[in-house]
Length: 397
Image (cartoon, rainbow, N blue to C red):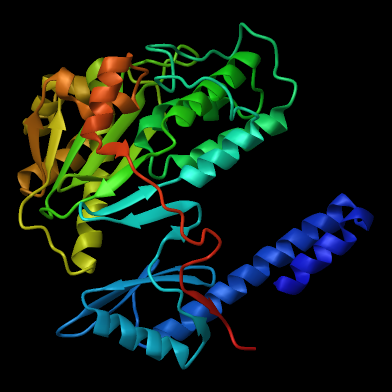
């Protein structure tokens, strides 16, 4: 892979577009060969499960996350981790770089409160790329209840630049649920962005400038799942599709969230809300299975908080009325989970609906209230070796 990378830098000026495409495919293919060889060897060594590979015996558990040839290790005891590192070192040329501090743009810090994650350096790089490092910050990432339109403005002169900035923003949503809705909005105009869409991107970046030190702090607590889900019914003025938003907590820590436009136009407010409930239920079921695979089965059924009484009644009513036949699959799916006791439904007032921040633009007081509920807070930074301070594994050829 390193040969192809060096070759592309020396000869790129002489290659046509087709040759560059072939070269990119070769680099990607070499990447996958490397990944396949590492995975095959790990499986031979008795580790199992993908993409998190874990090794377990009667007394310990070690989890391994593999990204191409970079590895993150954690486990129930230092001795168990050390034994796995020793095992891997016999097969690979491996450098152990100690505690994880920086990985793929994520800055990790260890404090008495817990483990904090930010993207401070990545945000600074994106702001510099957009020439917004000196601009005044915004208090929210989008205007309250403002919707972007496909018309009404001139076309943006540099669509490739727009797509580059939005792609960078997408990566920031990994630990910043507060911008998930706004980024979802600007992502819908990648092919033909307008100037108004670019202004929306700049507003998100200006908001990030004022909150670049904000991040998530994961604290010790219970291993119980609970979720909030909501839908903005027919909220998109371009096609009248609804937006689904949900956030799932493990204890007090948000572990999964989404802001996504629904695939079809809903014929009623209840239908849009029920589609959101079904999508959240599917994510909860997946997280339950993941925790079980990692030897952390849930002691209690997850609770799904919702603010729509009609959708909740539909999920518990054994009689499927004719007016609900068009959402029959979602009805049966959610109702089955509720009947089996695999999930509980509980009503929450609209003012306490945390998922509201993932379905629409909010005014500053309400937005800040939900950010606090999402455990987003300022984190002090002490950058330690931002190049590569995580274990790196390369195959011995």
